[in-house]
Length: 301
Image 1 (tube, rainbow, N blue to C red):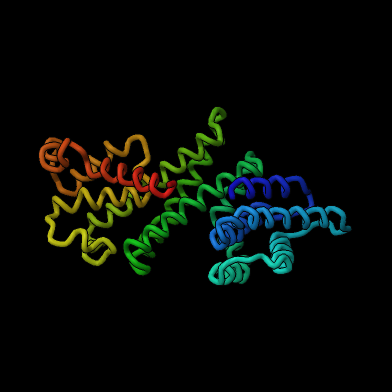
Image 2: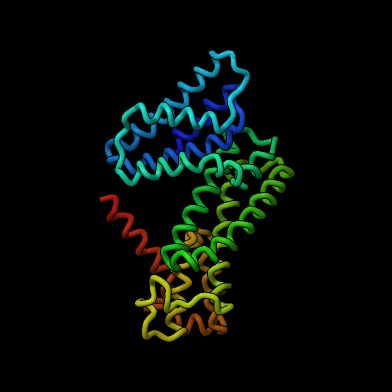
C-alpha cells in the first residue's frame, strides 16, 4: 500500500495546479488503508491500485481544464465521486469507515498538526514529506491502538493526550536538526524519529505507573498479574510495554529494560541479575521477542 501512496505523491508532485498536496496524501492514506483492510485478501492490492488510478485520472482532468488550481478539499471530494462509481467491493464495516473519512476529512485537514509541521519545511520535497507523514501516522496509529487495547478508552486517552504534544515537539526539533545536518539522509531521519517516538511512548507508560496513575488490576492483562508479587509483575509489564510501543526492536532495548525494571522496583542491576532472570539467564524481554518471532512464523505458514 505504501508504494501506491508514494505513486500518488509522485502524481500530485507532477502538477502545479493542486494545492494542499500533503493533506491530500494524508487523507488518501486513510482511504487506502480502510479499503485495503476491508477487501478480500485477493482483491486488496487491486482495490488500493484503483484509488491510485482515480488520483491519476483527476490530475489529468485538472491539467486539461482551464481552472487555475484545485484545493485539497475539492480534490478529495472528486476522489469520492469517482470511488462510488467504481462499485468497489469491501466489507460493510469498511464501507462505513470510508464514509466516516468522507464526513471528517475537511475537519481533519484543519487539525492535522503533524502535516502542517512537516509541510512547513520547504527544504524537503513532497516525497520526503510524504514519507515522514506516513511514519508519524503509522506510529501514532500503532500507539493509539496499543493504549486502547491495554487500558480502555478513558485511560488510553490519557496516554494519548500526553503522547501527542510531546511527539509533535520531537517531530519539530528533529526536523530542525535535520535541516542543519547536511549529511543526514531521509532514512536516517526516519530511524531517528521511530526511536524517539518509541522511547517517548514507553517512558509515558512507565512514568504513569511509577506515579501511581496506572492500575494494572484494571488493564487487559490483569489476569496475568493476578496473585503475583510486584517483583514478578514488573518484568512482565515492562516487556509488554516495550512490545506495545515497539521499543522492543531498538538496539539498546535490552540495556534500557534492565534500567527500567531496576527503577520501578528500586533494586540494583546486580539484584536484577540474581533474582529476575528466567532459567538460562533469559530476560522476560528476550522471551517476549522470541514469542513474537515464533508467532510471526506461524502467521506466515
